[in-house]
Structures are given as C-alpha cells and as structure tokens.
Length: 112
Image (cartoon, rainbow, N blue to C red; front, side, top):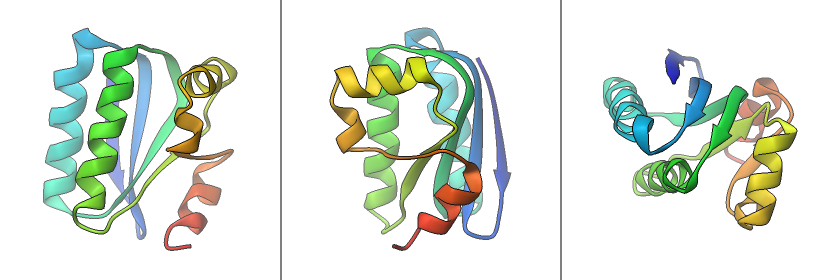
C-alpha cells in the first residue's frame, strides 16, 4: 500500500494505491493521523488507485470518519472504482460514505 497526503485549501487529499487490508491498517491510520494532526481539516480519500479493501480497511475508513466528526470535519471519497463501489454497496457503506466522481466535486461538497 502506498499512501500520500497533500494539504489543500478545504481538505487533506489522501491518495491510496494498492490494497488496504489488515496488513496496511497501521500504516494507513498512522499516515492519515500524522497529516491530520499537522493541519486539522476535512479529508478526501482519493480511491482511484485503490485496488482492494477488506473488512479491516473498511473499519479504518469508519475510524477516520468518526475521528473527523468529533472535531466537526468531514470525510469524502473520490474516484471510487467499480470494485470499491461494489464493496461499499454490499456492505451498505455507500449510505455512510459520501462518494464523488472527482476530487474537485468532493471538495465542493464539503460544508454542504
């Protein structure tokens, strides 16, 4: 799993590449938490290159959503491919996560 974080005006964009599984959970949480503590903000997860996510990865997304909600920040998902969208649908998490086609669209939705 490769994770990069970039701070933007309205959010931190976290780009995920590879698989978010039990093996990469700690790396994901640590990387995102470090970026967020540096500059508390909303978070957009760029899932364009996320190939697979397991139940632990989904729990990590839920953890991040709760962390952000505690400080009145929001989580958005962008560039979700068909595989990840199906996983969200099967687990009914499409009702929990705000999913957008593009990062810019996700950024515009923050605060709405």
